[in-house]
Amino acid sequence: MSGQDAFHRVTVVGLGLIGGSLGLALRRCGEVDEVVGVDASAAVGERALQRGLVDRVEGDPATGAQGADVVVVAVPVGSFGAVLEAIAPGLGEDTLVTDVGSVKGRVAAEAEARLQGRGRFLGGHPLAGTEDSGVEAALEDLFQGALCILTPTEETPAPALERLSALWRLVGSEVVTMGPEEHDHVLAATSHLPHMLAFSLIRTFGGLDEPERLGRFAAGGFRDLTRIAGSDPVMWRDIALANAGPLLEMIDRFEARLDDLRRAIAAGDGDALEAFFREARALRRGLPPRVHADEEQDDQQ
Image (cartoon, helix red, strand yellow):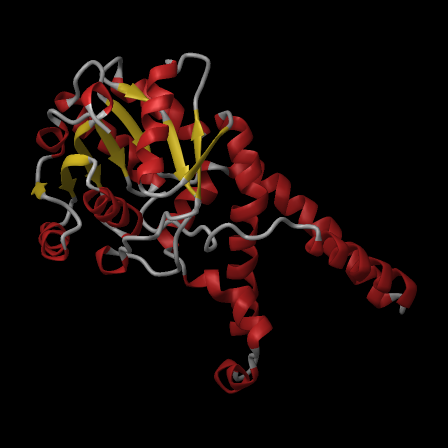
């Protein structure tokens, strides 16, 4: 990559799992002159430098954003607006601002309100992560083979979309696009609802008598279903509130299916149960192969 397509400076605000992994991958790809890190915690920033996740760290968000081609905001959804206000004084007219969050409608609205014409915002969401969080969890290959959803609007300039797509391809991601509203409905079904179910299942288990003793008998299926309940509670609080409409719709749909199952069990209706399970198995077998690890997004998101 050279000339006008080259990336001179990329600033990453928030150096946890997603932000730290992105910084590390961009440094290792050799196509970005400088990766600048910004984090609210001085200790996190120092550790990011020690691990080689960024080239330098700035304590002031606006200073960190100065001169950047792209600013990636990798903080929880609930903190996004405040971070936008903090970086805004350092943005150039053509600075591309993006995020990595799991909710897009609210984020796009906040960007329009808070940036007030400074920089150009284009939402992004890499479908990659682990249940671990923080600067120590950052991985160089986290985005290799992962989907990254970009959410342009009618106002998004084509060059901005092309440039941000190029950035994510540098770290090994496959880029797809969809509108912010479509994104939020898709993710409510494929990510947000499953996390709510995992949290609820482990809470149900915790309410039983002697959960510690029963835990000895929690086999692979239970552990697989509840693995993502180990995700960051603050992040998922913010996601649930920010995407409440689509998420509540999916919870209602799930409750309806659970009611179907309960009625069949209560009625002793074996035929209905078998039909329910057969349909579910067919749907599960029809899913496309998993591209990457389950999306978790630590710091965002």
